[in-house]
Image 1 (tube, rainbow, N blue to C red):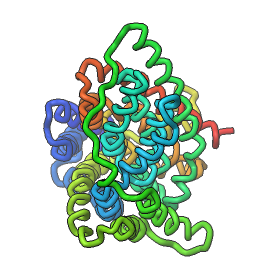
Image 2: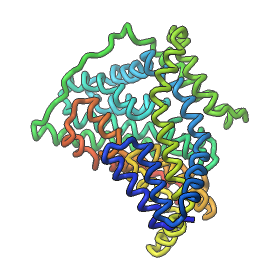
Image 3: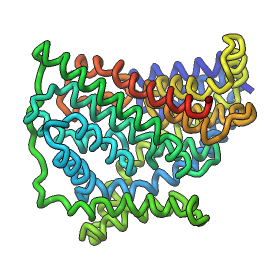
Image 4: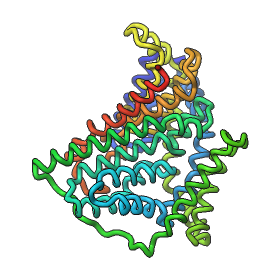
Length: 417
């Protein structure tokens, strides 16, 4: 219905608008409109494709809205901070970077958004970093890298969107990237340790402790873990017992259990409202993403990218990591990148004989490579969590991309060999 050039023009327009500080959802909608008209589809066909793309997002949007119950409970009961603190306390100053990375990975893996996971772990990380004389860039890299490792094995919006696009079980998709996540975690430790040594040689800024919540404000560890364990247990019923529990049910159930276990069930409505505020932005972003995905899916881009792979003599399977990397870089968002790539190329990859779970896992891992570019909110939120300047934050992008590339390469190797 639309030309490849038109789809690319629309995507470029959306990127420019995002960089110009336009609300991302509106930027994507305007970009979709421009792309459809520039692609020769006409106004009526453009709007039809945009609506069709948005409709395909509704299952993901519903599940993401439901996840707000879990997110709100984990954050407002202090469970997320307790999990992070427990990991750092048990590993101690000697393994401070490993503790910080593991804390961010754990918090993200249980379903907290990666930016919230980093912000949650930041006060604890700065405190332990001050005691261990660690530079701020190394600490932030450890948290971001650990968050990326946790993100690809979590029930987060990007995982949900990829699972829905390929029509695979969410638990199966989460499990498919466990080994890539472990390699990403190892890469994070190596890179953050090297960066710490480099910063020490240059006498760069070391971490300073910041005010933390007292232990009295946090629940017991078993209470903090109750919600995530409930979610994992319910989702695991399908592969182990043949009982399918949709994330639409499992995620809010985990939030309710968390509130009860922490003795704050009377505040469940308040927690849900807080969580809804955190996830509503992502849900709205997905609606905007659906419009541009509808244009791209109805364009010749799919066919042209396959032809390009053939001209370059690359295997069809390369479409999965390449599309994940490019789309996440274009939108500066793991969720938007994984969603657009999955919605656009899922059909072609499955038809080429690539297993749906393998393709979804690799797209998902690829979406963590270039998702932290400055035209996205993650870049600024994570930098602000440790009081880092924009210039210093920019220097971390190559290291973050390297962690994502390791996860993507391992994800590819696991099913290409």
